[in-house]
Image (tube, rainbow, N blue to C red):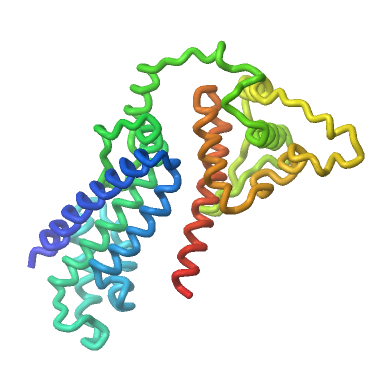
Length: 307
């Protein structure tokens, strides 16, 4: 049996359909003026529905175990990974599964097609998430002609971002000022909170996605830019009730000051509002917090769906 042929036909077809669905989702959301990161929930929900509707893999523990074996053994090989993993690990495990642990009249050929659909759905979403910066830029610019999700698990080069930056080549010096109208008081207070973290001893942020602590500091140029942009005054700091000041609360609590339902919108809007000011490390830090909030939101929704 040509293992690779059955699997890859369904994988490629499903991946291409998934890519089209994601692109159409972004275009529709952009037309509704939704922020980019809200699409992650929409895409994640669609992924789960498609897997349940189009594949048996998650419906049977025996098939889920085969999917796990594939993921664990795939990188044992330097070439022909798919074919060799199926031949040497998946097929021997499949023929040892009892009939009552499989769907009715379920052959290995049917499994390969089923698994190809499942992997196509999983990989197109995973590879999309690996390149969020690129797709966010396309989304903000409303330019989807170059939209493409790579089939291999790699990060896209930033040719699109570089090209657009050269085209636009904004002159920033005249735009950066203390009375900047793009930022409201809460956004300035949050940027001040970030600036203080960068200057503090305990300057680490924990990524919810991989549970790693990331060192965070800012170069002097970025600190000066932040100081220039923020430039707010708060007379409450001299009073007895200084703790009631919104600026003080944001400074001490950070993102936890905001209601959970408001955090994703606040952070994604802030990323958009500061994109002109060459705050690369600050933006990366905010995106880490944003991704944490998105992942928390997804976990909460999945938890509710499982109860």
